[in-house]
Image 1 (cartoon, rainbow, N blue to C red):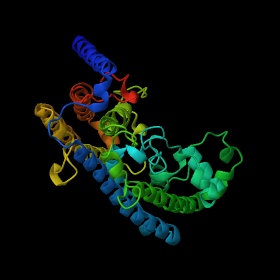
Image 2: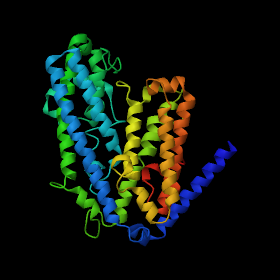
Image 3: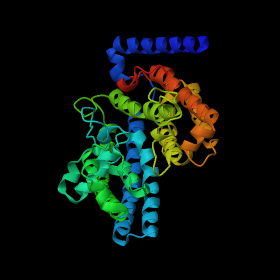
Image 4: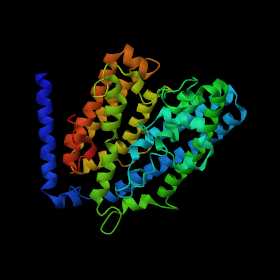
Length: 399
């Protein structure tokens, strides 16, 4: 406990020093560190091009999902439903890599170029099974209101429940209208299953439109946000290159607040929110049981930003900027820490993360600790060396 306390104090001190440094040097916060002759615009373009290519891959995958969902709804056979499930998995694999690219149009309104285009596609952890089930009864999926319904009833997370959960029960309280009036029970199992497929079909069609909008925003032939992020400067969306780098850095921290804290820390009980660990119901993918695959793809997206978007890390990434500013050792530490984390994830041999949480808590702890190593490097050396700002959403987290 004493060693952990000393570590926490040291980390907190490092964060305070970094914050003071940024507050006391406004010039640095806009111009960034000296990278010699390194082409920062080329790195920003590489980040943007990688985002565009990832969204292009997702667009193709979600079109396949939409076609499969339509067949499942039309045919209503187990084989057609299973094919839709496989297409959902493929689309989610790509999207989980895209989760690391929440800068620009996918980011929240109020950030540079932010258009809130992420949540209508995948709103996790905002998913509400009870409301989805209420909309099954009301057939909201057949109405224009679906397009403006709460994001916790739309997108890929809602589609997971609709495609993968076979039960005829619901998650609403007995006092909820669909239970109190008996409208849910009156549907019966076969009708509930039929409506789930119809709802899933409506959601995938909506997601196709959202995915196309996001792709168009980045497409060099249309919205061309690739150029927007790479031509940062006075009068532009990003008024400086450092502002653009901060936006990408904020997205990079997805590995902290989402991956370490919510996807692993909460269900394992290492973070607040789980009263009696393990809390297997808090995993990211409770119906398709793909939580470990999601983590693998999150790390793949992290790697694309760190080392480059090409095969085996080819192309420009954060590591190239670190080398240019004279800190190749940090680039290696981050790369090595990522390799350790991937190995720890691969070492979890149970069929699902839920099983690992119960049967291999030591392995889960090893994975959590490896993620924590990455996060500490990001929160201390990475932001300090590149004079970046710590995202506000993670400022209060000491590890």
